[in-house]
Image (cartoon, rainbow, N blue to C red; front, side):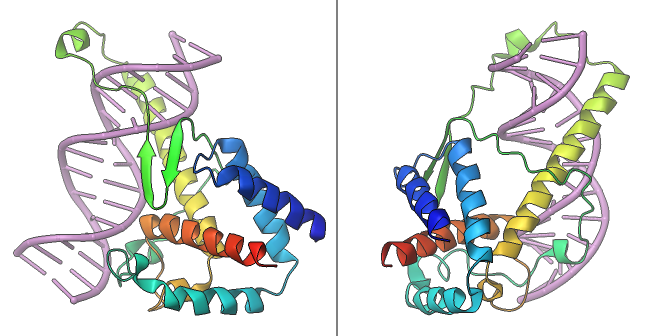
Length: 182
DNA sequence: TAGGCCATCTGGTCCT
DNA sequence: AGGACCAGATGGCCTA
């Protein structure tokens, strides 16, 4: 709808500064889902893909062209945490290179000494949570993959995680260009 | 067989 | 104290 498009444009304008806080990412996602579901995907996809072929050399063929292998396709992960978590704090996105300005994680060895080891029970709980967290991440990527036109995986092979992320950025940029021209 | 991709485990750090 | 997040290590599966 026009309202969705307006909101989407506004959100994109904010995001074009290359800094994408979690709220912005969520807003983009919501608008894209709403907007795309209300229009003729064939037309959009055809136009985008025609442009895609022209700009393919940007990175698609050079470094991240769809590769034939993706073991995940054979072993679809069963995800128990379908909800998507967007906790991108202090994250910058510039073109296709991510810069994660995360916390300092390395500490001098001297500081590590003397810290009591986690109990087995707590370690098992932490492992379980980590497993769920990674499955949630995989599920989110799986859903993201579904929003990309099938032609992005040229040989019919599912995209890898990194390809999914990169192509999604490319797809959003192309959708934004399309919108800006209307 | 090498290399890519992935899931899982683990220990460390930061945050609430 | 416990949860969230991160990165390194490890091993399995698959393809060229």
